[in-house]
Image (cartoon, rainbow over all chains, first blue to last red; front, side):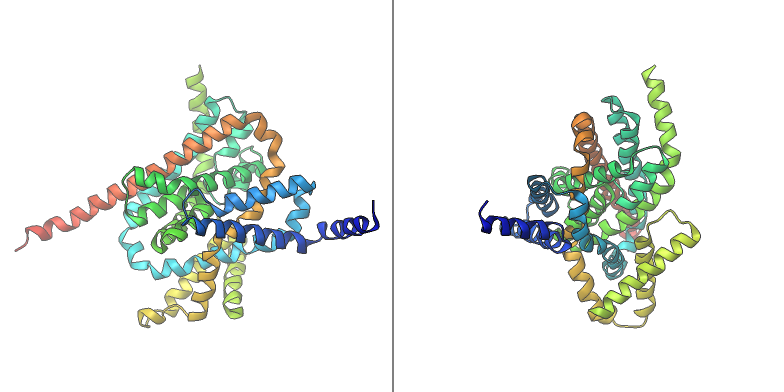
Length: 250
Length: 131
């Protein structure tokens, strides 16, 4: 190697281990993905979470960087999820009259949607022969990551796998919610947002805020309510679902 | 902006403390959201609509929520840790996530809209009969 190449390599080795590099690359990947989405007019398929993470995964694999090294930089962004969740109180407060008038449909939709999300995920995975630990890890896929991880662990699943399923569900939900609601002929932004937040948690909520502030508000409510309801209901429902699946199998 | 961030972090901190003290099945930030909501109810109780949320807080929260997608990216990249499992059971996992997510969204939105319309009609019928 020439002296210059050695020097460049030394700089890379130094930077690749520093949080600064990975924080910068994370923000740059998001900025690029967001600009791409805006340039296309923010269609659902140009989801910034999907595109930015695809770019980052490619960079990590190409440079042989460990996830832990990447996360040492990206954790500063990750940390802001907490304050951003608290911030959902502001649109909730602004839209209070609309929320109050939709209380009954909201709670009924919450119960039906939450049970559908849990039972269908487990039943489909079981029917296709996935092992029990994967079925359990899929059960809380629609709720926000910290709740899903602890629920999966309690029920005999794999917490980090559950987190990966939660993210995949969020991205898929955010990409499909607009075309799905259009196909169903649903125009009410409250109903559309509530569905996005219930089934696709924070990533669905982020998508809902891009479309409409009222949709975002209802998505934020659904995200909070479904997290709480799933935490209570999943440990009760799951044994019943497994018993039923076994009876059907026989 | 700094004061608004302090307010958000303080609510989160209080939320975490509450959740741990009472062993609630909620993440701390969700409890923090409820606390901030209660604080806003109290703060805005006698104010006109446009000044009910302090301007600086509104600016900070709007900026955070506009870029909510960014905050999920570090966790999303974590998928690289599970390549082996995903390769082994990829089809079952993908089909389960795809169908279950579509079903959950459709059921939620349909129940919401159907019940909303039903209640709305029940509200309006007596009034339609009145002179």
